[in-house]
Image (tube, rainbow, N blue to C red; front, side):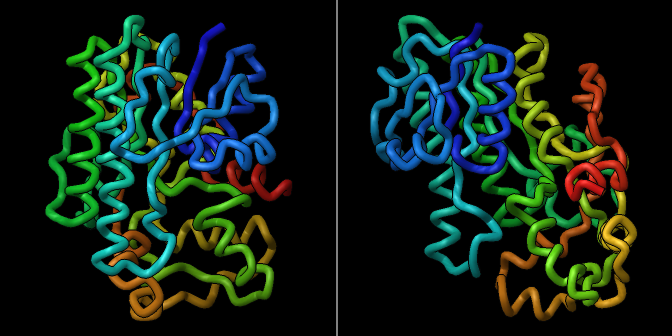
Length: 304
């Protein structure tokens, strides 16, 4: 039995992780800005810890933990980007990661591993290039956030704590995210791809991304960045066609790029970027995907 602490534990991935850890008998502690609310949303955790901001000392909270999972961060597709929101995106990731690493340095008993979320935004919009973990980062705001985020996370090694970063792709779930937003248009027979549809779409089933975090904890040989995307990349147009096929709806009505730019501003780049992400490192580490291909993933998620 391990003691696991999760930041962002009430979010989509954290919720799944809580269930998976609980099923195997681990004790889960959840960080939240509002512990009482977290307790109502996810009852049954071993403890609910208050996130007190990036300047707080979390040494006492992390004492005795076997693993730390860091998922917290402002949603990059949450609203239209302006300078203030971009700063929030940056601070919510880099500042919080730094606070956790500083606490680890002070611990009497260190955790075995620090698994920190990152994102495929690291790669920017490179078009047709295959993106394995050794590809250099792009020159963009989101790529810079990911670079600094991973750099802070890797500093846990200075404290003697193994560091793993999961470059998370587009997580598919009916609870939240891209798939949830696309369901209604398809149900109303007006669904289609975002933008031209030619961009590579780095999808992953929500269960697989959660299982990847657990795999990183259980395998001491894992260190550094791992791409969190399915092993069968496909273009946005192919994804929309698969969704239409599984839902028995047409996929004929693309959402033009300019519409996304009006709604999301700079954030539209996240939806329109072409990222042919290959999960080379996690496959080499022996991870077996539960949902390696899109039709099976969508049938599972939509109960078809």
